Image 1: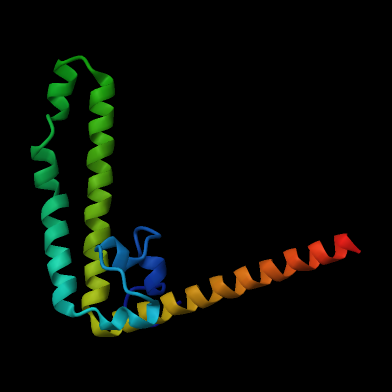
Image 2: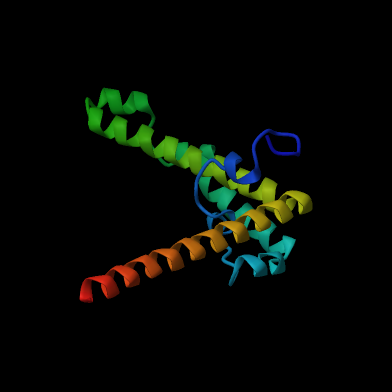
Length: 141
């Protein structure tokens, strides 16, 4: 497995597939520019999102499951528990993003993986375009 303390590379540990910068609302112009985002910007975005998605805040905004049962509205109870679980997953993902991006070594490793993934995607896209172009040229002959 990967080096570092927690098994698997940084990308495999992510609770979501979303870019960690985008998850915090920080979008670098390119993976190479991601190091230009200051730690203070990461902290500010993290704090705002954690307050917004904190489980205590989310639960306080919705009636409890018991109230939904008393109202005899199973659909409401189901959608609320889905909303709570989605919000909890978002909360965990935000925490993970901050843990990675606020640690210099983990951030450098993540940025390298991000750049490699972008380069691979670009190469794959160029290869697919070449195959399509070759097929078009061949079919015209």
